[in-house]
Image (cartoon, rainbow, N blue to C red; front, side, top):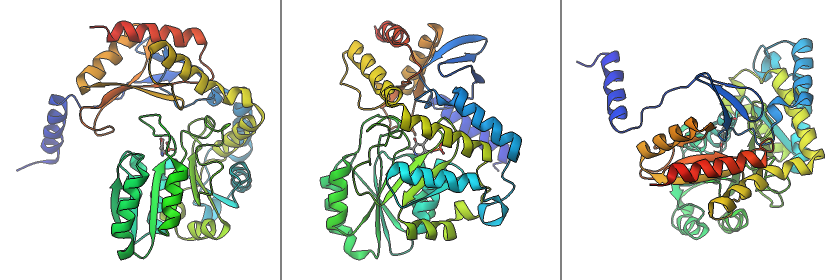
Length: 379
Ligand SMILES: *Cc1c(COP(=O)(O)O)cnc(C)c1O
């Protein structure tokens, strides 16, 4: 008989044996770049706070003000009593920023993706996902009763094949992709995907979690394309917390009426909304800051002799999970925090170091990391 504890121990032992057990490491962020872990101060290349806004004094002042004025929590779902005016202000601002008619803010990016896909598709519908999309888009597919298929990474021709073969049998069809792929840093071919969707009467959703604040002057990968569903998060370059989707007014109204992760989940805390509003203002006003993460990433790929970075995320693929963990530890000894990414986050045999760059890094930090990385990788 398998008791609950025995089940968990057996699972953990198997993961341990495969080098796939994960452990939380208490880590305090000191500013946009430095963290404290195990008593050691490290330069972090593993945060998604690409513009250093999580510690920006203007963002903090906005959050403090909202906290003092409106309290720590929203108190309820937005449809009950939690619809703070700061949230509608944030939605108007996001819609304007994205050039969309309307926006809907959710409790997180994960809740946004899970809610949007499961609300817009159901039985008899088809959901097509790039094989490397973020887990939250897959969760949306699983929560929906639609048929879910994946197309080869960034392969619009394969998407067309699948649409030709399966679109006819479905009532509605939603295609979803990351804009910037979170573990690879490459960009989706949005124009080609959109053309395939147009030809086959499908709706395209682009998750720009890592594109906003970094790519296309900070407006994300989908910017400049007529993508009907543009999703993003407040928790990465915007330095706050929460998720959103931009779309036409009827689509947003429908989501606000029916998306379960919106209706049955407490609203975003007012301080998070205020912080995101202040961060958006900075993104719009400081193009020089917005240009930095990509510049730093390209400095690194140049120094490493790698293909030029396309976003603030650069993967250094090493293969085996254990090797990725060893390299991460070796870099930590040299004063750098770089995350080891293993299956199931990435495919088997494609474990990697995931290096992320921020406007807050000094060029000297980037050069130091490249040097340490080369030493660690040397046989
Ligand atoms: C981080 C991330 C999310 C989830 O956003 P959260 O706000 O952290 O829940 C969704 N999609 C992608 C591509 C991400 O990288």
